[in-house]
Image (cartoon, rainbow, N blue to C red; front, side, top):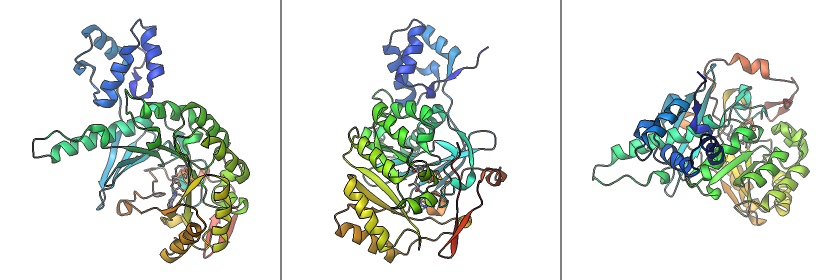
Length: 388
Ligand code: SAH
Ligand code: SF4
C-alpha cells in the first residue's frame, strides 16, 4: 500500500487538483481545509458534514500528521517554546510570543542553516535538512491547538474562548533556518497561512525574514507577497561579508535593489531591516551614519536587536547606552527605529538562541567550513563559506 499523504502539506490549489482528479467537486477542498486548519480536526470520522463514503475515502488516502514536541516550556514573561522532533536526531523550535494586542508565532523553516552567521546559534549547528511544507504548517497547527486548549481550560465563566484564529494573529518566519533557501516547501505553507479557508491571516501579519537570497525575494514578490524583514546587520560589504556570509553571493547593492523591487508588490509600504547590536563590531556612530545612507535608498523601518549571547560565539551584546545612542542617531536623521525587546531568554527562546539540534552536535564540526578567523573586540568572528 502506498503511504498516506499528509494533508498539512497541501495548499488549496494542490488539494483541489487532487480531489478533482478523484472526481470530487472543488468546494470539497475548501470544506476539508476548514476542518483541518480552522477546527484543528485530525480525525476524518469527526468531519460530520462530509458524506460517509467521502470520509472513508479520505481515511484511506490521507492523514493529518502533526509534530511531536519533546520539550514544551513557558517563560516567566509568557513566551512559550516547543522543541519538535523531526527525526534522525534533528529537532526544530517554535516560539509563541503573547503581547497585549497580538500573539506572534515564530516558526522554523529548516533544521539548521547553511548561511552560518557567526552570531546565530542555529548557524553554529550546521545544516541538517529542509523542512517539508507539512512540517512548517504543523508548527502552526500544533501551537494553535495547544494554545486554544489552555485558553478553554483557563475560562471559568462559561463563556466561549476567544475566537481561535486570534490566539495567533501573526506568524514570523524567524525561527531556525533561512526560509528563502527552502522556497519550494515554504511557498505552499505561506499560501495556507493567508488562505481564508485555512488560517486566514492578513498578508501584513505574515513575515518572511531573510538574510538576503535575492532571486527568491523576486519570486516571493510574484508568488505570495507577504511582509518582508531583511537581516541587514552590517551597513557595508566588508563587514556584512563576515556577519552574514551570504553577502559574498548577494552583496548590498543587489540586496537593496531587490528590496526596492519587492516594495512594488509588498503588502506593507516598508521593508523591516533587522540589525543585531554587537559590541565593538557594528555599533559605532560611523556604522549608524552608513545605515542612514542605506535608509535613504529603501523605504524601511529599522529594528535593532540586542544580541543574545551564547557560549561559542565569542561576541558580546552592545551596552544599553550604546544601543540607545545608536537608535537616537538614526532617529535624528529621520529613520524610523525600534529596539526589539528580548523575550523568553530564561527558556533559551530568544532570537538566535534556537538550537534545536538535540543530540548530534558532532555535525557542527563536520559542516563548518573555512577556518579563517578575525579578531573582533575581545572575541573572534569565524568566517564560513556559503554552501552550494
Ligand atoms: N534566516 C533568517 C530567519 C531566521 S533568523 C534570517 O536570518 O533573517 C531570525 C532573526 O534572528 C534574524 O534577524 C537574526 O539576525 C536574529 N538572530 C540570530 N541570532 C541572534 C542572536 N544571537 N541574538 C539576537 N538575534 C539573533
Ligand atoms: Fe541562518 Fe538566519 Fe541564523 Fe544567519 S541568522 S545562520 S541566516 S538562521
